[in-house]
Image (cartoon, rainbow, N blue to C red; front, side):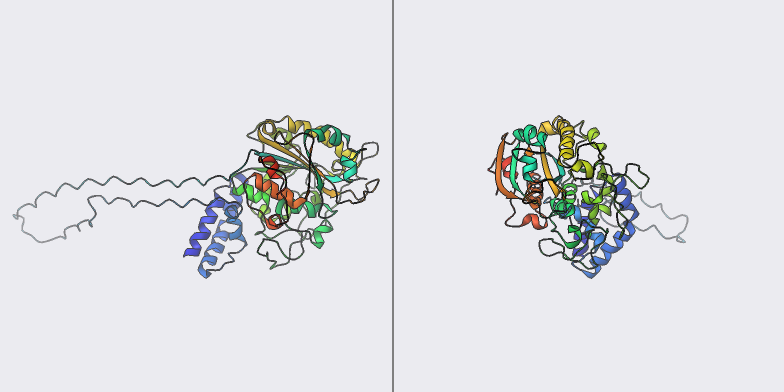
Length: 445
């Protein structure tokens, strides 16, 4: 029964973080999940199955140990600890027999012991940054963004002097999905993600992760055991939100966590939303208990959430539509296109983030590039060399960090800021973190 207790404890830890829609989904699947857990315990198998893994992912996603279940005090037995006397059997005693002596007064019931309260699980050791805002754009190359004659003047000449430039931040691939998936899970590119997943396909049955948590094979929707930064934040009792511009259902109504049907091809909308810009619906760990549908929301929700510290997520991931991301040829005639469109988007959004109470209190803004613009003009010498910018009161304005960073570094750095362990390739020995620059140490690692 040792295995059953461990699985049950992990499931309780996960359930403790569920509210609203996610709780309803858990209840709906409780019978199936319980069967999976009991079956795993009975066989004492190390592979407890997808449902058990999903229920236990909150514990796996953070360093926080699960508090031991409180011991249950035994109910006191009235009249002492001995068994109660059996009632006298009916007898044919004569009516003149003397009356039985009065029963002794029952001993007072012992005071019930207080049930000990389980100690609260300690929060992860977070640093001075409690709110991270990530904006993911398409890059026309480092020179277009930060060069001497930039195509993004707001970014290069107005925002850059306020922050720390990561001058050697590079992409893993020119497509969007390999970089965003790496930045939220540490998973490496595969043939399908490098093609931006033209078909919303599952990994083959039986796909397994290695010792670092890297899933072998090719696919677009990762198995339930594959954890993400969003899972880690939930496990650490922190909040995340992804804000996707123009995300809508098939009727055009704003909707959450929009993605194609399994094995279907996405119908492209010029300049609009595309699931290739949204990494979160590509993980069963976020789909199956409703995290994605609860937290992956239309961009219009962001401004409302920025009004108060309490409504601002610890991680806010922002992705504009194909036009405002800076993908050339995606904007209507007569409006800025490519890098100019992305710069105009930043000039509208960033002042709202910088003015928000959460950013002013303990925020970090990361302006990153998650893909290369395939039609950038002029074409950059190296489309993977893109740069990135950190803006925070904790960095020196106008400074530069020339350490080599990539999307794995973005994940590792965010995990370091929130006191989380490193997922998959973010834990590689050669992967650098820029978190020390925000934690009072030198940049790099």
